[in-house]
Image 1 (cartoon, rainbow, N blue to C red):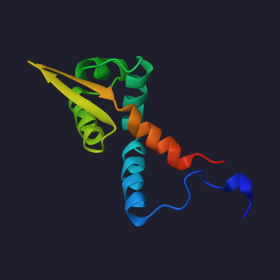
Image 2: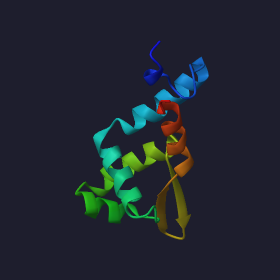
Image 3: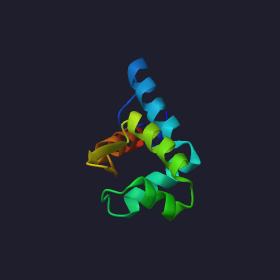
Image 4: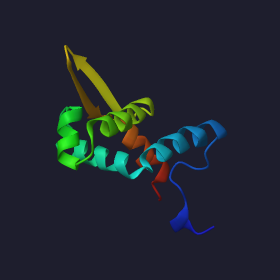
Length: 104
C-alpha cells in the first residue's frame, strides 16, 4: 500500500462508518453546506433563521427545514431564548469529520 494514501485513523468499524456516513450525507446537500459555511463564516456567532434566509436568499421555511436536519445530525446546536432561536456550529463534529479523512 502506498503510504501517501493511508488514512490517519485506520479502517473504520461498521458503527463508525455508519456514524460518519450520516454526517457526510447531511452536508452533501448544497443548501445545508451553504448554511453551514454562512454560520461558520460569521465567526461561529449565533445566527437566526431569518438572518440566514436573508443572507443566502432562501425562504425561511427552507432554511428552517435544513437547520432541523443539521441539528438532528449533530452538526449545529439550536438554542431558544424566549421567542428567539439561534443556531451555532458544533466545532467538535467538524473535527471528527476532518480526523476521519486526515491522511498521513
